[in-house]
Length: 245
Image (tube, rainbow, N blue to C red; front, top):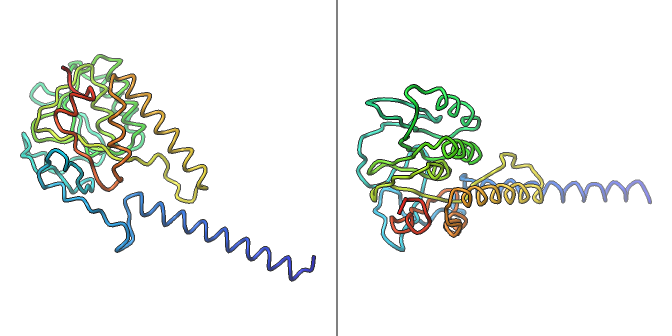
């Protein structure tokens, strides 16, 4: 084969690979919360609008959007990383769930004095794997979880919430689920990215089953884009096993 032919073939292959790479990056940007202007804009109402049966999907930006219901107290801006506090004989676990939060929070719970028996949870979500790890520890330690009226638990937070030995969720609290991302590298080949997501979803489903949660709740999570949130109604929380009947 002539050198010029080889060069043209290599150039064509390189252009094809760059095109595939660009497609994967743009696809990841559109499905991972960052959208190009005018492309795939969310159609759901803002989270501040009331939720009604059959109309439960809302736009969701962590750290900005909050439910329309009036909270039991004004939490202000929740911490960017999960924080365990003790005040008025009450433990609270609040804030975003960042990678590596599990080891830190579990250590704090283990060393807490007085011992943690019940923890009030409020979080916009974050790292799924850390939420699962904390949830497993709560169940093993026999710690109960609770929400307060008007407060919220979204994204990865419900996985932490269901780890409680018992779970107290008032009707005006907001629990929401959606799709999750399990990998951070947008340049990962497509087949490896899909493989990583499938492994992550399998881990979540195994965890929910271990916690006694009806796996049919996952149809709401899988059908809801990452920049939207599906708010579970009180009857759905009971049906799927989130609340103690």
